[in-house]
Length: 65
Image (cartoon, rainbow, N blue to C red; front, side, top):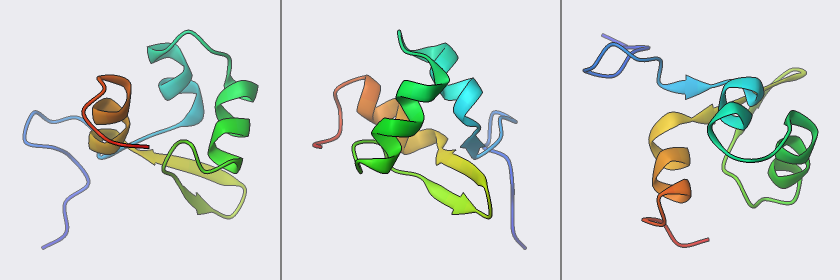
């Protein structure tokens, strides 16, 4: 069975708008960081989805760049 939520009931991925709200940068800057490979992301057509766990680890300094 495939799950789309964490054990805490949160979605496994974030939109660029949701991720940008968690850090001091705008959506455009966040998209540019994704394009440069600085933030892990998955593209689904025109949509960018950011894995929640990896993003949280990155902004908390727990993951190497």
